[in-house]
Length: 378
Image (tube, rainbow, N blue to C red; front, side, top):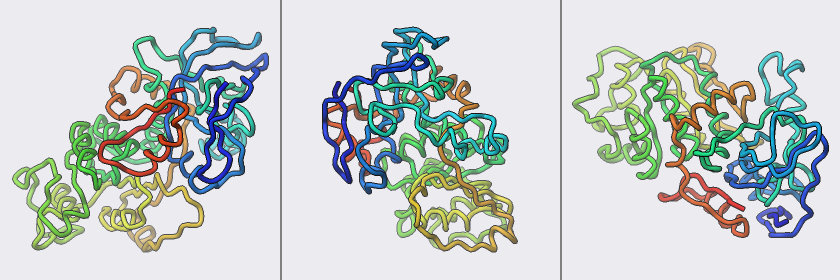
């Protein structure tokens, strides 16, 4: 079979590998679509793991072979894969810290070499311990919709960590594919979302997906706000007391928009879906007392940021992180995605054949006005 093999930093090569042999308690899947994830981009671009490997973990396809001991699936089933599944029994799992479970940290889908997802290949072997994470895809749904269940799961898991009630105001910084999923899922829960990004097409989709306000925070520091959906007449005038002072001469700065939309209270939560220290520091300042700052994109170890920790202690502003998926909510995720309550088809802007995986990774690594979710379709 053909596979795109990682041979070192920025070195992906199309090679011929043996079709994986599944054991009696495993299945073999012909890959239909695999999303390009920032986690894999980081590994490829920075060479953070040793080669050789076949990456790609947001995967969906068709079962072409199953072991004699496999129950509940048949050859021909269209399925979405989860490459990490927790044991549900260890100390970490008892605390619902599933991503810290030793079994969860093992990758259970491979196309060869050290297991690394295997989605950038024609076939992938699914090991027994991740079979509970396999989800059937109805005939009406695309493989891309199946592949997107894993990233949607990571977002829903993060949202469940926030103490939110309807009509709360949440900032979602960054409107790439993950940020847009945050925006849509929060809007579906009755939360008022302030969506920020530097690219106008992404802000436009954020509006369509329910953002109360969509704006370019950098532009609005120096010129009149052009990206907010809500006009100034629809934003309540700030009271004379509260967490913030009015934004002065620029009535459409992010600070002023937050002040007006919350009537001076401050954000109930902020989700940082872009690896920007500046965005995190600004968002922390805009939180109300008792609000929550959730980091979702700061995954590069060794990076340091300067935060005012008195905000955490005295003002009780929670600083939390969320990483990877939650196996226990996969049925809820499947209902949301496969029913198209969250119609992720609008996110998929590019599909590349397997031999152009390097181009797919390059495109996904550099934000572009016309690009959102990039898929590899072997």
